[in-house]
Amino acid sequence: MIKISIIEDDKDIRESLAVLISGTNDFSCVSHYTHCETAIKGIEDDNPDVILMDINLPGITGIEGTKIIKQKLPRVEIIMLTISEETKDVFDSLCAGACGYLKKNTPPLKLLEAIAEAANGGAPMSMEIARLVVDSFSKETSRKVDLTKREREVLKKLCDGSSYKKISEELFIDLNTVKFHIRNIYAKLEVNSKGEAIALALRQNLT
Image 1: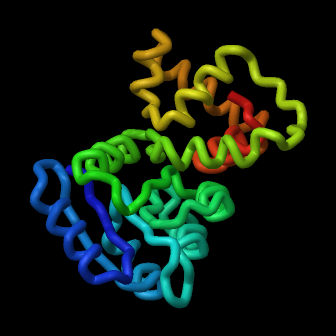
Image 2: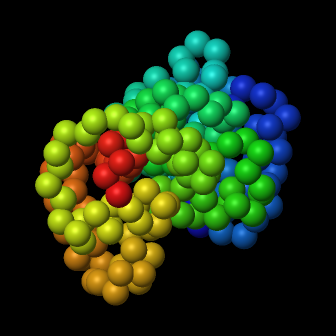
Image 3: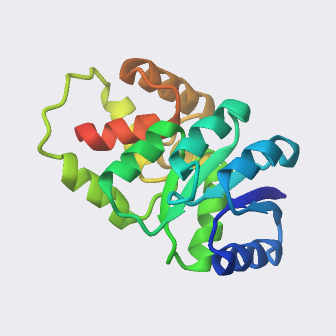
């Protein structure tokens, strides 16, 4: 059972997401909040596996809230669910610790698949969002990062939203080998999370 919390100030969206999640086998909506302030107080007791987070919240923004919640619950996976296509919002969200970034018009089935992917170590991101970031930063001069060919392959799969298990299957390598490569990637990129690694990879066109 995947436990999900929702942080969204729009009542209709919040309630429709809760109904969708709770009405699907193997998914459970354990809580939903209108503000980050209240979520931050209760989220540890909820102990969700995945959080769906809006960006443009009143008071503490979704990006600021992500930073705070990741400090409280480092293992929770946070998916930004928003209408914003601003590259700064995408980049800042990933750097704050979010593992994925989806638009609010994502079809229900795709959203459920994204939640499952996040819970299993993936990094779901709408293709148009990923392309937006790549296009925006493709002309930037990047610092040299000495990644091996295999590490670049693993990083590309991570940017495509693949879970560790899926990367293992697609590259025909052991799951522990995938984790070994990802630890090396984090060390070389000087990052501490999937979100940061993906943000840097997209920004510097490393894949």
